[in-house]
Image (cartoon, rainbow, N blue to C red; front, side, top):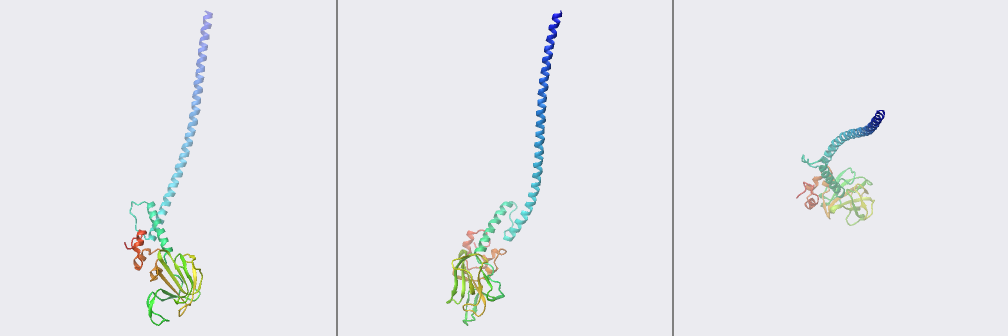
Length: 277
């Protein structure tokens, strides 16, 4: 009996030991899973915090973008108004409007830099305009092919568009004295006559607003002034519409100046809505 009791006790002890070992393994597994879960929870919270920061930044950027869009919308509207672009349809996006405004601005800049516009000199007044007049030297009525600006000798004279110096020097037969003749885009030319001094060389490139000479009284002249002409190819046309032409009235030149075949140009620049079709 004693032996049997000892054997049974040993069996129970072994089983209890195995159960304890199983419990210890289970406890370790639970501990590992808890640590894993805790780590995952910390990572999850970290990701949530990052996501919260990203959402906060996105919200800030959204507010900033809305403010910028409002400013951009105002600036775009001002640009469209300046360029004389008609109001777009409601479904037209700001990006599409901006592209149209960009194209219109490029067109206008090309034209206003390459075709004569503005005045060539700061003068006291205009003595004679374009058209038939009584010539003070020839003593008869003749065609006056430009505009005469009264100005003291030595007053700066400026190019009214980008171009190339076709001629710069003294002309005796024309009566223009010292003069500069510039060739511009699209077949336009400008003449600056009766100068006291020429400041550019033939074949040189000049830019709009560049000082090209000083006014004077050279050639067939009765007093200090600048004789200014605008020509399309070799035909003199009234400079006045070109002198008044600018960004604010860009379309006006296409209807006021009939001596230039704008209809062929309008095919190249379809944004000129008022150009003859």
